[in-house]
Structures are given as structure tokens and as C-alpha cells.
Image 1 (cartoon, one colour):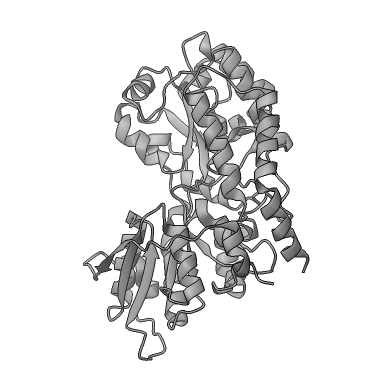
Image 2: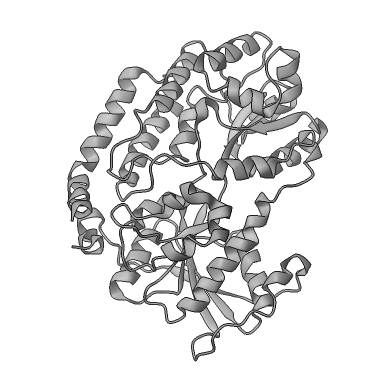
Length: 429
């Protein structure tokens, strides 16, 4: 029994098909750094002049990749259909059931679990074992795109944004705390150290948390909830550290009580009040935009407590439909996209806004780390339970407690109980 046959049990499929189409034509972008992809040939057949791609949004990376791909393959038209984000999972799955699909799906990483186990996407396992991909993404990250019940890789990374800690190195050094990235990462593995730093910095009107539950919010949007056997991972030791620290931060009011995205939060950054925050790697550019006057004062390092997470809301993957008539060309696009976007992880001479630190190497090290768990079809339920709880936290002065954590775990296990039983039966077959 294949998982595709139980989709109606796990998800009510929408019949509303809403989208808009865009054809992106070749541009006159500089191609000097992409010479390796020029003059590539694709076996000619009647379908290889056209690729259909569905996505929930046209990001800069998607648009840029298509344009550069068009320069390497000037006779190939890439037709893009944008699906409403709220309907994209239903629309993708319905097209697979009806065997009326595009060649390529762009899948938001927050929806990866919804496609785990669906054998109507091409198995990219052999291609992901290519030395290039193993070096670029490492087996730990590739596991994130593997089925829960087969040796089956159904998608490959396209846009990957690891979560990091951004911090004011000058202020931490002044206050007697580790200021070098590797030293600070090691220091923050210990929750007692983190709480000590939050306590002592607060006496000087410096904060390392936007809200008491900031760490929980970011982890909820970046980590996997279950392992391959569908065991809930929210009770592991590193997660417990997050909950304990969040409770301590809340009880002692050691947080700013504003987000970096608000005018008040940005002012707190300017006034040296918020001296640390957690954000995906794109925060590197946001800091330069918001605080050009703080050139050379910021650094980035790993998340506290040894946690590793990739942004799921912005991160994207590419999958090839098994019903595509252009599988060879579709794979060329996936390969091209991966190679093109991998350049963001090439070592650099350092970013002088960050004191000459090579942030690309930091990001590469993080995405090369084995990630606990993997996306599963029951992730959506866990995400919704946590998001509802975090919404309630945002609406009150309440801080998280051990009883809250136990209640959340119980709610998640109850919500996924029936679906988990069905999935485990499939895994055992």
C-alpha cells in the first residue's frame, strides 16, 4: 500500500485551482561566473523546448536561476505558475493524483513533510549520491528530503537558510563574555552560561532576547518535529534546555519585549539595548541595511545549546514529477539551480561589516551538520499546536512553564495518533 492512496485520510484535498502564469525570458545578466554551464546539450525531442514549474512565490533566487538557466539554454522556455500559498499543498497533490502535473515543483520547506512517502515524485537518490551533492549538502541535509518509509529522495535543496546567532562582539567583550564566534558558540552550549549572560547584561540595559519565547519561536520554524519512526523530538535534552531558559528569561523579565522587525526593536538595536538575536542567514543583509553605522561591530555564530535549524518559511526545495515528459531537462534545471545557488556557501575573504568574518564558511558548516529527525506527513499538526500556543504567549504576559510543555506534547501526540498509526503500518510493510 502506497502512501499516495491514504492521502484522503491525512488531508482533505481542495478542488479549487488558483494560479497565475509567468514566462521568464533570458536577460542580459553577466555570465562570467557561470561559464561552466554554457554550451551544455540536452537530448533533443519534441518536448525539450519547454519546462513547466509551479511555485508558491517567485523569489529572487527562482527568478535569477531561471534567467541564468535561459542564458545557458536559450531555446528553453520556462513557464512559471504561481499557486496561492494556502492552497499549494492541495494543488500539488491533486495534480499528482490526476497525473496532470508540471515538470517541476518548488516546495516550501515548511511543506516538505506533506510530500514524504508520495511515490509520484521522481526518486533522486542516485543523483543525490553524486560526489558534488554530497560535498555541497552532506548526507545529513539530504536526509531532510528523504521519505519516511523508503530509501527515496523526493526533492533536493534549492534555497537553504541556516539559523544563526547575530551578536555585538564589542559589547560582549566589554562585559567580559566570549566575543569570538567559536568561543561564544561553545560557551552558549551550556544553559547556565546563557542565563548568566542574560542576567548580567540586563543590569547594563543590554538584552539578548527579543521576547522570553524567542528561541522557541525560531526553533518551531526551523527544526524537525519527528524522527523516521515518527517519535516526537520536542522532549530531547537540547529542547529541554530551550524550555528551561525561556522560562527563566520570562520569570526574571530578561527580555526586550519587542521584535527586531518593529520600529521600537530597530531603535533598540541602534541604542545598543538589543545586542543579540536569532535569525536565518539572510539577517546578514538586514543588519547592513538597518545599521550601517555599526560597521565592524557584529558577528555571527551557531545557535545556543548546540541546536541546528534551517528556516522553513523561506527555504525551498525542487522536486520532479514522475509524470513529466521532460525529466532529463527537469533534472538539468535542478542540477543547475543547486550549483548556481551553492555559490553563496563558497569561502570568502571575509565580510568587513562583520569584522572580516567569513560567514559563508559558518553557513556551510551548519548545513553540513546532521539534522535531528526529518520532515514527516504529521508535522503540520505539531506546527499548528505550537503556533497556537505561541500566539497565546504573544497575547499575554505569560511565560512558558514545564506544565505547558507537557501539555503541548500531549496535544501533539493526541492529534497525530491516528495518522501516525497508519503511517507506521506503511513503514513496516
